[in-house]
Length: 215
Image 1: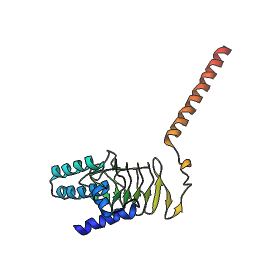
Image 2 (image 1 turned 90 degrees about the horizontal axis):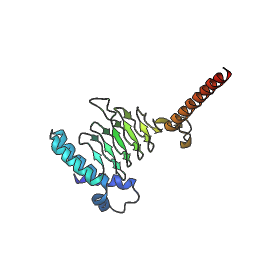
Image 3 (image 1 turned 60 degrees about the horizontal axis):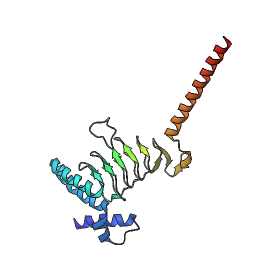
Image 4 (image 1 turned 30 degrees about the vertical axis):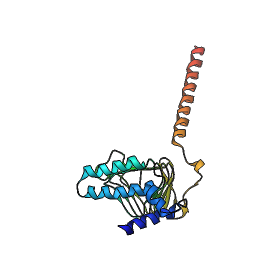
């Protein structure tokens, strides 16, 4: 048990340069507290004691701002940086040595049964505010950009950005321009479509007006 605690503390310290001591992680870091609570809750969950598992997980959510369902499967070395607003669903699977930033949701779409949440591979980084929704896999060594909405599988060694997310780098090869200013904005696109329709309506009204004047 103590070996696992030391490993988790070391994993967090490696990825956060602001940490000054192991005691700081143990007593103050919400990621460490949330994962310790998750391990306890998962122990009860696996034995069918679902009520007590949820008691532990909900108490942890109130203390840390991180909500991890006790049914989730989490490997070693997970680091949830800052952590506020992170939600990890019941059938989520997370591999080893992953990093998740604040505001991330690993959730479902409401359309699936059974396996409803994503499977995250090893060494995956998920940026702040990203949403990964559905029972698909994010491959090993991949990166999900901040505020991306991922709705389908991401191959290993890839970078996904945007809403909905698209893969822009795979195996070190850029698949398109990674300039964030050039990533399509779905809201702007809808506004352009509405403006175009309004212009068409004005043109039709002008034609009708002209035909009435001729009459």
